[in-house]
Length: 212
Image 1: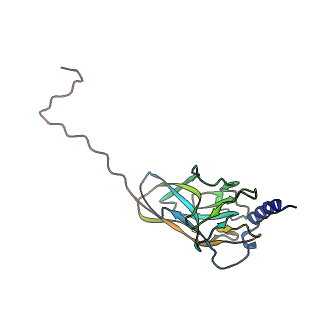
Image 2: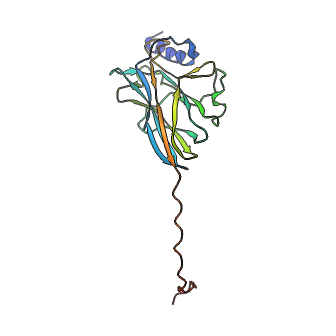
Image 3: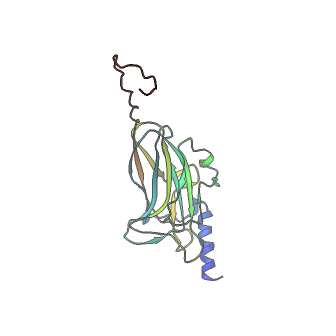
């Protein structure tokens, strides 16, 4: 096999293998961060929060795949879906894939958690790169359901028996780059009341709708 084909197989294998099979190591050089990390909104608003891969060692690191377990308060926020901006990296596949490790995270979003996955393009010369400035992975859309002085949307390290949040590299199969997993805070108030109609003066004649 040539080098390019080997690389394609390596990325696909490292994404499909169970999380526990990845090589254990200390905190890695790529953090998952939310931007903005504080969002102010009003009940009924749709808010968009971006998830970034940001290096913490001043270097650049190629990313083969990202798995992220999202968690939020379902009484305050509702996950509507996800979107990409025009200048985002185009993933080979991304979204809320049915959970193949049987933890059932994506069976429903009404319980306040979801499992997002992204797999890099397979051609050898088309890899996403995390940098100190950050690589935007995806934008998540939430609807604000209730007022709150502050509720968190976070990336959990793990949930259930198998599922983990992780950033995987491309240098070798099982390379784990996962660093800190960030959180964003949403503050939401109630919408202002609709203005009342101006009171009619008792001396005003009734409006007949006819022009004088």
